[in-house]
Image (cartoon, one colour):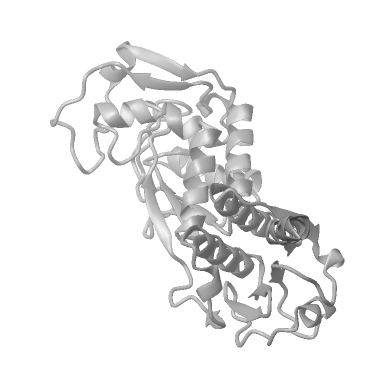
Amino acid sequence: MKAFVLSLLCCCLAAAATPGSLYYDHSLPAVTFAAEEIHKAYAARGETLVEHSLTELPANGEGLRIVILADRDPTTGTLGLTGVAAPKSDKPQSYAIRKRGTTVAVLGADAAGAMYGGLDIAEAVRLGMLADLKDSDHSPHIERRGIKFNIPLDVRTPSYSDNSDSAQKNIGEMWSFDFWHEFLDEMARHRFNVLTLWNLHPFPSIVKVPEYPDVALNDVQRTLIPMDDTYSTSGSDMFRPVLLTKVETVRKMTIEQKIGFWRNVMEYAHNRGIEVYWFTWNIFMWGAEGKYGITSQQTNQKTIDYLRASVRETVLTYPLLDGIGLPQANTWRT
């Protein structure tokens, strides 16, 4: 009798330890990110999930099934296999959470919506509230939710607030993919989907213009000259020649490597449902002034020609760039 009871207890424990299953489209980076977050949430509890593709989803299954779908069409066979009701909205970024028996389904209108729904599941697991989830539908109240990022690219191409020791120390981090990996993941977790990068004159650090090859800057430099509070908050003297008398190269990079770097950042951002924009609301020529007759005078035709070429080349160089912000009233605007 004791042996029978022990055998029965072992069987029950084995059944209880049977891991749940996670089904999703592995070809969608945004959904894959949400799936990774779900795995991390279970790992923190000492539990695991078995991964499956959507093609492996059975009509009926035992144990917990978490299914993440990114499909607007409620008539697809995959949705039918979950046995849950279709989402109420097909608005971009929207999603529904449905429960039926041991199935928990995220029904995204698109990849971004599926990612957000998957992140909700991960949070519920971390909080121990997965069993408490109810059927729900979610759509964004604000379509674009963004961050304004004053980006210190180089002492030669400063941002709007680089007149500080902390900004100079952060220049190297702007060229670290580890930084952007963590930052963009956090943006996605908090449902931000727009990143605007602000710099007084970014072009020498991010693009090579064929007509102006000497403007493009190799390497990444910061100044070791102490900063003070005499710099104008308007940005008009954010760069001073004295800053170049004592510089440190924080990263050795060719302009081609810099272009590759920002292409990778933009691709990673898009894989998290994040749009990327460059902004330069001014006509400061830091990093280019004095070359090819370029000055900060708005009426200088050589400056106008250079800026038009820089904007053109930036758009061509970065196909994943979602937009570029320029001054509204200048004759050089393209």
